[in-house]
Length: 479
Ligand SMILES: *[C@@H]1O[C@H](CO)[C@@H](O)[C@H](O)[C@H]1NC(C)=O
Ligand SMILES: *[C@@H]1O[C@H](CO)[C@@H](O)[C@H](O)[C@H]1NC(C)=O
Ligand SMILES: *[C@@H]1O[C@H](CO)[C@@H](O)[C@H](O)[C@H]1NC(C)=O
Image 1 (tube, rainbow, N blue to C red):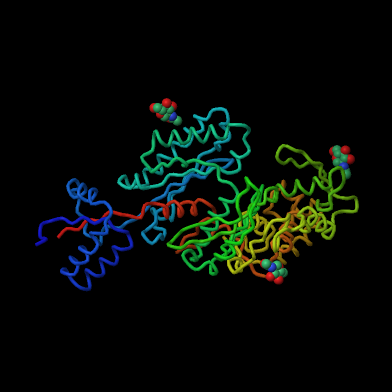
Image 2 (spheres, protein in one colour; image 1 turned 120 degrees about the vertical axis):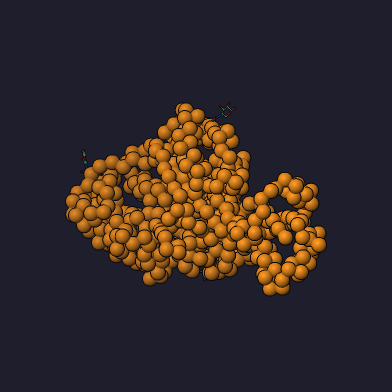
């Protein structure tokens, strides 16, 4: 009866597997009844009819692999990098050539074109062209294109950043055949960066889609801010303290891999590695700073302000440095919540989503630079106490000796090694309440299948963008 007719199905990608297995197990006739059962549920029979009439292509179902691409541009302060990711229908990463992603970079960053927004947008054209070449043409309309701008643009004055982003959106709309939404180019703030990074890390360690209590927490120490992100129970989320108007709420909802998560995320401005140096130098303004290596006398410039930098005549000391760091960290600030981290910020309840911690960015780079693990390792298990012992050792070195002791550490960072390490230890233990002997993973990359993938926000943004796509995919049956 159905011979020589086409049946077009518009169904959820996951249901196809069900249909397929019915087909294989029960044979042809039961397939027909499955189709009949499904048909009334189809939302747009009009659309169904159109495809039936116009689409000449016929795919055997086994060969119709439903895969998705996402194109994410990371617009940083020194350059812009494009990432193209390719996922199968269970959201597993597929290879593009030999790698798990395609990427390419242009320099300088968008912020160097502050007065010429159109030029800024045009600087991205080579990246866009390269990405569009990687994505098969018929998938362009379903492939999200997103640009996230971080530190560089955040610092521009007045409308400069918004003008650049608008020029980028215009360029995307004018030129790109990819899926460009109104919010295709935005500034990514700390809490977004934190939650996308949480997605990336949990994805790479195979925890995404699992119960919240099985996921891992991520603490990301950048230059300007530090982000803590972990999943909490529905109940904790419901009872989260309110924040003052205009501030990001403590809880962000995420829906990925068929699972809804309540993420506790907080970005502590001025508590990044470089920013915190300036904060301690403000406290010791006009006098010696006990965290600075002996034999150094210079200046530190951060965010347009300049600070004189020198240690006491008697030299620095770990104990005095730690006291200064704890004072600057504001661990004793009044807390109007059940429990706080520091500076009066709610701690999120410290539930099981924070039992396992991944620490990224500066936590990784500095522990690598001072030799806390094999310099070639993409990630390593360390304990907060390891930062403490490294700090004690470094505070006793002179500026000159430290150059020999830490060949991986750039000269510009050496005067602050005692300060940075003491800060990292204090932040983890006194700020976030970790046990000094608890193992954490410092990570820059994580092995996924047999490739190393960067622990950075673009992959998480891609995962979220793909998860937000309309869930219906087209299938055609020929019988
Ligand atoms: C986009 O196209 C419009 C109209 O064609 C043009 O005015 C505008 O300058 C273009 N913008 C970019 C960034 O190419
Ligand atoms: C640091 O150097 C400046 C000039 O180079 C000098 O005036 C100042 O006294 C020095 N400070 C210390 C503490 O050595
Ligand atoms: C606050 O912290 C204390 C000590 O860590 C803990 O015993 C208590 O359960 C926490 N309270 C809440 C509401 O999280």
